[in-house]
Length: 296
Ligand SMILES: C[S@@+](CC[C@H](N)C(=O)[O-])C[C@H]1O[C@@H](n2cnc3c(N)ncnc32)[C@H](O)[C@@H]1O
Picture 1: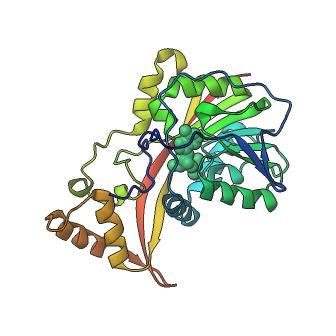
Picture 2: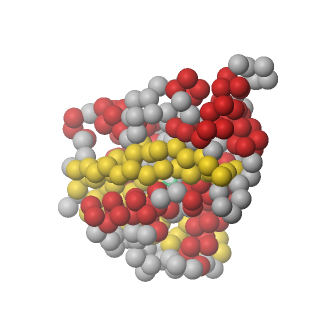
């Protein structure tokens, strides 16, 4: 099965994979171990960091996000809850969709992103709309020393589900005003971006909202100060129904001859929307929870 991006944890790093190295990438290029007035992050005791997506999987995710209303909805919710951040630490920043409409162009934005393709997308933003954006090649478990920030933020990263206590502790340490998380909140499947476009009989996943598990794992002493909910939908474009079928069949790991292949083809015939510019769109409805911890 080829893994594509979803909202769920990724498999653990293989022993032969190199450890992530913290580097700063700015408009002027890559600066290894760039020296800044920073405070070192506390040691994080968690399971080993996860490996990053393949560039192909990251591209599928980012291009789907380009088509979807997620960035606009997330930025509106963040703005309403927190106003504009004076500086931001963004862990697992992806291509910057939730933050780029929220962070002022001149506010320092430390965007931690281990995937190369997504970091290149962040690099493009730093050369155009957000000159104060610093893409960092690191995982949150192994952060380089960073300056204190106004707000520490993460959206849809595996750590909120896998190690919420350690992640929250680190982010509280990094920020002065607030910590903000965006976590999947839809009742539905979560394993890959488009699984919500399929009926339960096909995706076969349990449908409890992820946010319920996150809040339970945090326990009564670490509950957020406040929260908000916003809807959006993930939208992927396929060149043809055959391509959409191949993508979904690979995600579902359907071997040749599996009776669910016919059910998938029937479902896609109904669900795929032809686009005026050519190609077909498949959408999955989503709900996100914005969780805020006030620090000041
Ligand atoms: C579902 S994407 C979310 C991207 C972005 N925050 C958004 O909401 O569009 C998850 C991101 O977390 C990153 N990621 C995975 N493991 C990570 C880790 N241990 N530390 C930092 N980022 C990680 C992935 O590379 C990916 O960009």
